[in-house]
Amino acid sequence: MLNKYPWSLYLLFLIVWVVLYSNLVAFADFIVSLLPVEPESHLGEALAFFIYDAPKVLLLLSAVVFVMGIINTWFTPERTRALLAGRTLGLANILAASLGVVTPFCSCSAVPLFIGFVQAGVPLGVTFSFLIAAPMVNEIALTLLFGLFGWKIALLYLGLCLMVSIFGGLVLGRLKLEKYLEPWVQEIPTKRLSFESEKSSLSQRLEAGSLAVKDVVGKVWVYIVLGIGVGAIIHGYVPENFMASFMGKDAWWSVPFAVIIGIPMYSSAAGIIPVVQALLAKGAALGTALAFMMSVVALSLPEMIILRKVLTVRLISIFISIVATGILLVGLVFNLVL
Amino acid sequence: MIKVKVLGGGCTNCKVTYKLIEDVAHEKGTEVELVKVEDIQEIMAYDVMSTPGVVIDETVVHRGGVPSRKQIEEWLTTN
Image (cartoon, rainbow over all chains, first blue to last red; front, top):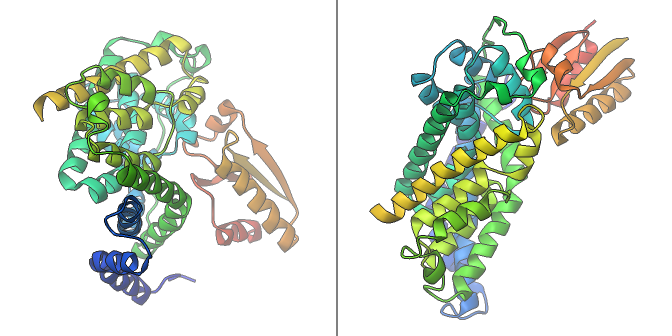
């Protein structure tokens, strides 16, 4: 069975998608008008927000995950490693951070990936650039930002995350922290690994895209709907400018506070972004909200526990401090400039 | 007897993969020796960077993500 999904099916999906997406407002208005609630009431506002945003984000997400699923077929971790092996700090950090965006990554694979990079002679600082960027910038985060805030903020988030990854990796590399790797990791001999790229046909790549949609959207839709639900409640019930007093621009201390709370918290971008949107709508400053989100997504307790297998506590602490400082600076500068 | 190893440090996808291979082997009546490899150093010996990895008779056939039922059926039929 060569062609599991025929071309006509992809075309059909595309048409259905475009029709649905371009009629979202009409659809949401229609549904809300059917409901026995006052549109101006708290409940009415919360429902309208939810009924418009939930399908919009899910549609966008399906499209983006499909495209990323296809792009991912070109960037296996093995190819990424081959591209990074034997390079020195500097440009390689930019490359590593960018590859972190397009290489499929799951934090459960962080350890084998880390060892795989070390084994191939990828410098530690370059590996860190990759490891910071990979979880922080992903298609789910970017889609949600685009869907809920527009492309400017999505691009801004992408740019800032890349900066934190590149400079974080550079600083970590300069500090010469190899001695703080777990001893067994230090003893791993570097070897030249051969790399053969597997050729995939176009239909295989398309199939990979479809599988990604089934897999990713199937897994995260619940969190997205829940997140938008919480966002909707905040939207409808929390008074305007409620957040301004303690997450507003003038409260400079709110940025470090947001970053610190965000570190141990773990949520995928899917769950946190709709909440962030609602916070913003109620007067939280953009820099504070983005810093909070970056901290929640990039640094998390479960990932640190996984990385503990290869990094000593000391190295993990340095890693967290540097990334947190980067995020903090981004948040502060953002609030200052905007 | 086909020797199958599932590489991966106990993540959900690794467990799902293990179970799926078990099921397919059972359905097809193929005799397999199914082993779970959780030790990171042993996993790295196969140079697998994204888990779960699947090794059939000491050859890595799969890296990253849960393999499809169709793929597993193919692995268990060859030889």
